[in-house]
Length: 296
Ligand code: GUN
Image 1 (cartoon, rainbow, N blue to C red):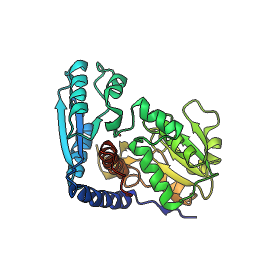
Image 2: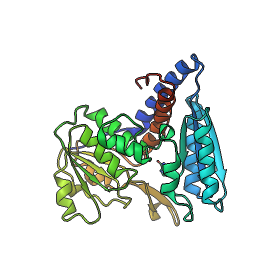
Image 3: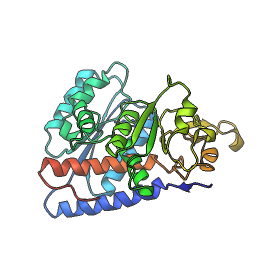
Image 4: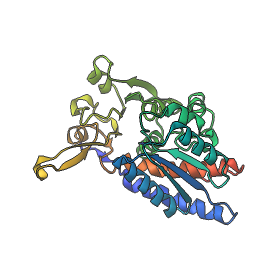
């Protein structure tokens, strides 16, 4: 079997186009959604993410507010900025780029963001809403994974889903989203016994562990749908000394020979995260004004 490649880049481009259309309609009603991004420090990967977020925010017609603080900024300064953004009527969504410098309590910052503006879906109120089936803002990467899954299989009910990874950002919300789709969900992690066996039971296998090519082809059930959340930079000596390439958490070629559908890395889940962030910003902007969320 040769798997269908799930093109996240194309899906994300389509989603952004539909969001831009909805933002255009809102503009006619005098509403322009605004997204504020807070970056503390000079982490190069975070700087690239934040620049891409700002560009794509403007491209769909939203307002972008960038707040860059030095790595030496105190926790109180970050909390005070978040409170200012909470109170700013032009700001519909707030994203504080993680990781934060070690001297700042990340959980405290997350819990200071107004849940109505929490476009990352990290606030315990939104995590709790997801768990209890109440509408709320859902973490962007798992939401993107679900959209990609549904693009190849709209009805997931009754399927066995295995999520490898239990982070608050991906693994746990992914498991909740799949449960809400009536999957039978297993959350596996670094202490799971017989991990390859557990994975082999999955009709849907989501890998979110941050270990390059850990999930091998013989861990994949024939016909399974494989979603690879990993973005790992590894040496690529074939391209020359010091060169690197990006691989996922799944050994792609091996898994693609067994799966029915698979996301590539790059070009799979990655592009969906920012597209879903924009979707969440649109949702927050509508909900704060009592408007219906457009179907995007
Ligand atoms: N750092 C890496 N990914 C993310 C994300 O989705 N949200 C935030 N806030 N920080 C991140």
